[in-house]
Amino acid sequence: MGDRSEPVTGERLGTDLLGNLPSEVRKPAYDRAKLRPGIAHIGVGAFHRCHQAEYTDDLLAEHFDRWGLVGINIRPPLLADTLGRQAGLYTRLIRQNDEVEARVIGSIVRVVDSQDSAAPALEVLSSPDIEMVTMTVTEKGYCHIPSSGALDLDHPDIVHDLANPQAPRSVPGILASALELRMASHGRPVTLLSCDNIPTNGAILGNVVRAIADRRGNGLADWIETNVAFPSAMVDRIAPATTKADINTVEQRFGYRDSTVVVGERFRQWVIEDRFAGRTPRWDRVGATFVDDVTPFEHLKMRVLNGAQTTLSYLGVLGGFEHTSDAIADPLLATFVRRMLTEETLPTLMPVPGISPSAYVEQSLARLTNTAIRHRNHQIATDGSQKIVQRLLNPIRARLAMGQSIALLSVPVAGWMAYLVKASARFARAWQVSDPFAGRIAAIADRIGADSEQLADTILAIDAIFDPALAANDAFRANVIAGLDGLLSDNPMAFVRRVCAEPTDARLKRPARSA
Ligand code: CS2
Image (cartoon, rainbow, N blue to C red; front, side, top):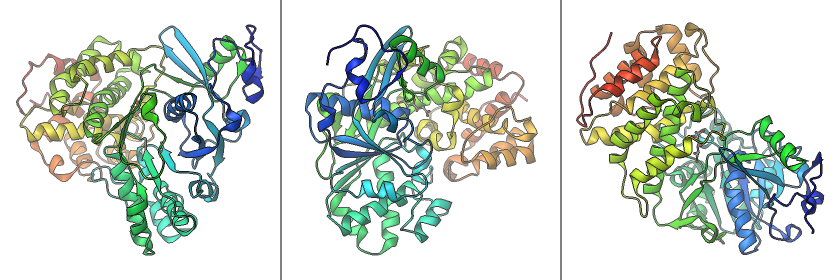
C-alpha cells in the first residue's frame, strides 16, 4: 500500500481509496479485512466517532483483537447512506486554531439503521459476538427523571414499551428486550457502558433497564444481576456537530470526499469504572483510565468543563454571541465564568486523583478559546433541562449545604430559564429552541409575561428538574428571581457586569432586587 503524494480529487472515501490517501492522512494501522464485531454502539454521532471509535481504533492498532464496532442508530440520521457507503470509514480532524490533523478511523465494521423498528438493533445487541454495548444517546435518551434518576414511567415511549416488549422504542426498552433475548438464547454476559454526560450514568442506566426488567416478571431481573454490568464513565472531548465547511475542508485539503467527517479538539479523556461483565476491550492500554470510583472525575468534568459550556451558551446567546469561542473571547463573560468556577464550583469538588482542580479550570477555559471548534451556543443550550442538574444544580445544592454563596452559579440557571422564556410567543420567539420542557416553559411565559417572581416560582415548581427542597430555598429563589430580572431586561450583559462587580463573599446571602 504505497502512499501517493498527489491527492485523488473528488473520490469518495471507502476501502478502495485507503491505499491511495495523501501521506499526511493517517490510516488504520491494522488489517480491517480481519476485523470482527465485538462491540455494539448505539448513537453514532459526532461524539462517538471522535471519542470511543478513535480509542478503539488505537486499541486495534496496538493490540489487534476481535473488537470491531457495530454502529446502530435508533433515531435519525440514517447511517446506510453515509458511513454505510464508506464501509464504516470516516475522517476525524483535530483542529486547534490554525492546525488541522487528519486521520481515517477504521474501527466501525458495520452500521445498522434501526429507526423504523427495533428488530435490526435487537439482532445485533443479542448476538453472542457482542460482549460490550456502549451508547451515546443524549441525556434524554435514558427516559429518567433528571432530579431523581428514576425511570419516568409516564414517558410515552416507556408506556409504549411496557405494553409492547416485542417492539420497543426507547433505549431502556430496547436494552431490556435485548437482554431478554440473550437470556433466552446463549446467556452470555455483557457490559452496558453509558458514555453520556449524566451523573452516575452507569447507575442511571442500570436503574432504567432494571425498572423495565422488574415489570417483565420472567426472571430477567435476576439474570441481569448476575450477567450484566453497568459501569459508570466520564467521557470528554469537544466535538460539535459537523458543518458543510468541515466536509469542504477535507475535500480541499486532502482531495477526497467524505460525508461523515468529524471535528474535535486535541484533548480527550475517558475514565471508566472497573466493573465489567464478559470480555472487555482494554481501552486502558491506549489512554483510557479504569478506576474504582468515577464520581470525583465525573463531578470535575460536568461541573467545570460542561458547567462553563452551559454558562457560556445561555449568557452567550443572550449577549449575541454565536459560538463558545466567541462568548469566551468577551472579557466580561470570561471573567464571569472563571469567577464562577474558581469561587463557587471548585469548593464543591472531591479530591481527584492526579488532577489539580485549579489547573483543570484553566485548562478547560483554554480549551473553550479554540476558535477552530465551531461549537454553537444554541447546540450546547439544547436540552438544558436534562443538563443543568449535574452541571449547575448539584454544585448549588452542595454550596447551600455548606452555607456558601450561590450568587454566581444561579446566574446560568436563570440563563436557562430566560433562554426558554424568550423563545415563547409572548417574547416574540427570539430564537428556536429544543428542550423537552420548552413547550411547558413557553406556556408559562405566555401566561405570565415578564414578571420574574412569578416566572421563577412557576418554573422552580417543575419537580422533575428542581427537587422541592432546592426550589423552596429562599436564597436560591431570590438569586433566580434577580437573575431573571437582569437577563430578561434589555441589557442582560449589564446585569452580568453588576454581578461581577459585587465584592467576593463566600457566605450565603440574598441578593438585593434591582427593580
Ligand atoms: C456539550 C458537550 O452539547 C453539550 O452539552 O456541553 O457535548 C461537551 O462538548 C462534551 O461533554 C465535551 O466532552
